[in-house]
Length: 300
Ligand SMILES: O=C(O)CCC(=O)C(=O)O
Ligand SMILES: [Fe+2]
Image (cartoon, rainbow, N blue to C red; front, side):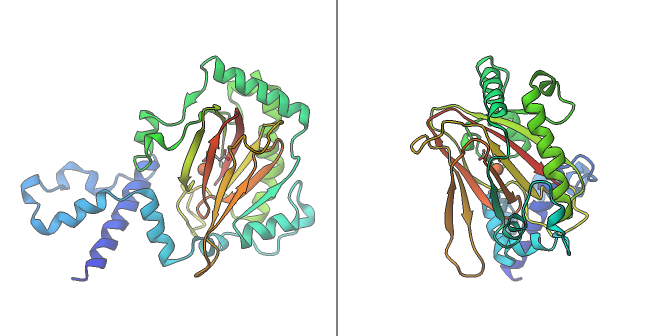
């Protein structure tokens, strides 16, 4: 048997297990049924390679998937045709083109400075009073077994519409509305989305906290797929950011074909908004030496 075949089969199994562990409405994975599993002494020497594949990290898995098809080509299949950019609320035609061709794009000054200050103060207060959760840790590790517990040093809260936190901070509520209404309406015109979105406020303490290279979802071209995030949008609340404060968002731009990977560092300046294709762009947050606050939304 060609060893790559069994590797691929095991990999496909791994992806299915991962996908089913992430989604509550998928049917149970057949081999999760204890009765259908072989007992330990039914495993033979030839089964060892399955054990090896169990060790595969999320990044290895993504590299393997990328090698068979550049993820941007898959994501491009989800873009709508004949988009009328004149009808956008906040995006420009250039933003749409960049998102399609490069996988990421930036907007400036999307939030009013007074609101930025108010959200920053509220976020800092929430952190200092112990009301934000460390994003890494046991709970997160169970949800996402591939990722190292030390991969991220930020503290987060979910702030989806209806959350009690949005009643506490009218400024944050307005920011979430910008994401959930103005930006979401544009993105629905540009890309095939199902309408679900998640919003998270993150606080990075000034102790060189960072977030290691990762991707926010698996690449997909399946219009019916509701599990994978499609677009990530982040806006920053750091009014006095200066060179040396760190905390830049690093985007790893693989280009197409044999092009060399480029690293694009984006300063987390107040009111700047970065958008990228969640299943396409690897990214990281560089060590931050000043308090760093960001609001992220993921659209499916
Ligand atoms: O805050 C940022 O710039 C990126 C955060 C991020 O990558 C994430 O939360 O998945
Ligand atoms: Fe991310």
